[in-house]
Every structure is written in C-alpha cells, then in structure tokens.
Image (cartoon, rainbow, N blue to C red; front, top):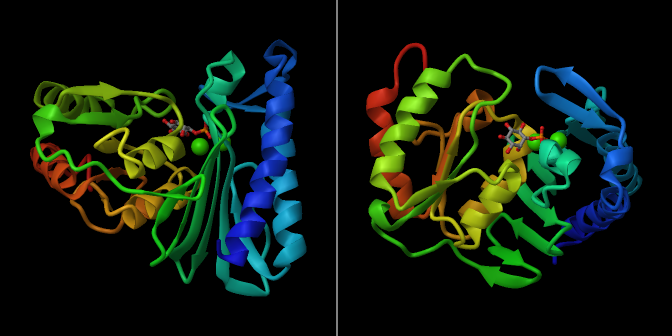
Amino acid sequence: MHPILNIAVKAARRAASIINRASLDVDKLTVAVKQQSDFVTEVDKAAEAAIIEVLQEAYPAYGILAEESGNAGTAADAEHQWIIDPLDGTTNFIHGFPQYAISIGLAHKGVMQHGLVFDPNRNELFTATKGGGAFMNEKRIRVSNRIRLDAALIGTGFPYRMFDHVDSYLSIFKDIAQKSAGMRRPGAASLDLAWVACGRMDGFWELGLAPWDMAAGTLLVSEAGGLVGDLSGEAAYMTTGNIVGGNPKIFSQLLQVIAPHLTAKLPA
Ligand code: IPD
Ligand code: CA
Ligand code: CA
C-alpha cells in the first residue's frame, strides 16, 4: 500500500474507533440540525478532528476540505488537498441503521490520487491509488460485468433535504426503475460508490452530492474498471454534485436513460 494511503488508513481507523464506541449507545447522541434534515452529532466532529490530526501530523502542508470544519485556511501546499467525510451516512448512524462509512481522498491539482472508504460495521476497507487498481481489505476488486440494464442493480440517493430537483429526480427514477432490475437507497454515497467498485451494485446515480461524498468513491470506481461522470458523462460531477457511475456498459445505458430529462433547470 502506498505510504500516503497508509496514513489515511491510520486516520480512518482512529475515526472508526470513535464511531464504533458511540454506536453502542446511539440514544445518548446529541444531534444538532445544520439545516432541514441535515444532522450532525458530536461523533461526526470528533471523528473529523481525529482524522485531521493524523493527516496533519504526517503532511502538515497539505490543504484540507472537510465536511464539518470546511476549508482549513490556506495551505502551504495548496496543490494537495485531503477531502474528508468523517461519517458519511449520519442519518443512518443516528438511527443505528448499520450503513455508514468514513471517506478520505487526496487530490493533487484537483485530480484524485488516493482514496479510501472504510465501513466500520463490516470491517471492509476499500482503497485505491491512481493507476494502481482498487482493493477491498487488500484484495483486488473489479466492477461487475453485467451488460444489460434490465439485469442491473442500481444504487441511488433520494432527495431529502434539498428539493429543487425533486421532480426531475422522480422522473429519472421512474424511468430507471422500469428499465433496471431494481434500485437501492442504502444511505451513504461513499459506500454506494465502493459497492459499485466491488460489483455489488452495477451502477449508481444521485443529484446534489458534496465533494466529500464522492472524492474517494469515484477513484475506487475508476480504478476498479468502471466509469464516473456527471449527468452527461462529462467530468463536472465534483462541481455540479450530480453523478452517475457504473461498469462501462451500465454507465452508458444510465446516461441514455437520463439524457432526455436534462433541461435548463436540471443541467448535467
Ligand atoms: C449523505 C449521504 C447520503 C446522500 C446525502 C449525503 P452525510 O452524507 O452520503 O447517502 O444521499 O446526499 O449528504 O450527510 O450523511 O455525510
Ligand atoms: Ca456525506
Ligand atoms: Ca458526513
């Protein structure tokens, strides 16, 4: 494993021990509401602080973009940026619904170089380094080889706090639901992408994600032989937040289904 990734794994495991301890008694959590249906607990914050401490000790100059603390000032080395979601799937976590993850990615000049997604419930560690393949618990993973959308299992995320695109979302949903073998909404986007990378789902799409939901997961998918893009298949997903991913065949079929729904109101 690349030494940078090793540090990120150390950081993720620190966060996981905080999350695991707190998961034993979720009724004791203090939950704050950031905005409608956007929750944060002291666990998100403590996990993020632990991650940042480990990363900064090893790479003090790198920039940081983290969900709870934002953009941590101007970094000496602004070309490198850690992109961190300390607890992806907070709503699940609060309910004791065991589907959430820690996501850490490192970008260089905006291009993802390393990524990890750690699922503390299953003890599954997904890692990837650009050009070096994707792994789960150090075993090579690949996207599925399913070629037909009507046989494919597709992951998504339902809108639940921003409803600007809810009508477009539902019309795309209706189309994909009719043309695929089924849809799932597990509730942690980073893990959805990791599950596309290891072939448990054949494709994934969601609107309005944040960079920290996608950074590490997109590298996992591409290093596992899959494709990721915005709603037109282009590269703007990190800025639009609208993302499609999958094995190459399912990715292109998802784009075909989505294309007629693109409008000025729902750009790619
Ligand atoms: C959320 C999860 C969810 C997705 C949301 C994200 P959070 O992240 O990834 O699956 O649908 O859009 O915000 O808030 O739990 O870190
Ligand atoms: Ca998230
Ligand atoms: Ca989060």
